[in-house]
Image 1 (cartoon, rainbow over the protein chains, first blue to last red):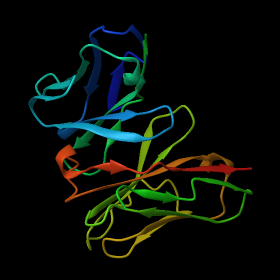
Image 2 (image 1 turned 45 degrees about the horizontal axis):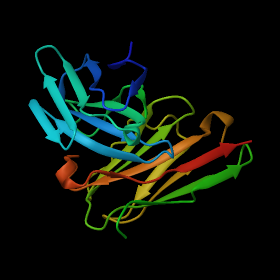
Image 3 (image 1 turned 30 degrees about the vertical axis):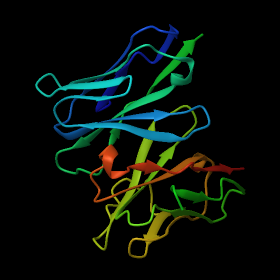
Length: 110
Length: 117
């Protein structure tokens, strides 16, 4: 059983659509990270959450600690948002050792 | 430099040979991480360095893997007697204070693609 589960595995959307990617985790966490991996392999850290909600441009990340669930939302999606989005959990007992989800491959069509 | 630099970007080696991968973190970043990503799979944590503290080696898959970092500078990941299952992209990341907050510049390098033939 994976400590971090993501859904969906693959997602195709039309430009402009509102997108939601879900992440559920089973470990007690100190923080939940969302990462973006571009087709060339480069990875960018998008958010680190321990509670509530964060917004950065068209990206919004939320977390519900009681339900052990986080969502990443993309508003007004654009083809340049096409990437793999990875959820990663930092367990309470080791803040810097992440459990990674398998990723959600997003393809936004023009 | 402005980002995390890894070298080489690609490495093809014969089974049984040793390889050394290098990571130059962002200047001033005290925390440095190594991850591995096998083809079609998720990221795996390998090792974490924080300043002069003892590294967290709990993710290293076998004793053929080792990593060093001197102070807050360059790190090298060494794989001895490489096996085909070691083929993967090896990613390095650094951050300030080890918190990973985006405002603290948690940044990944572009990775080293290792192919063991």
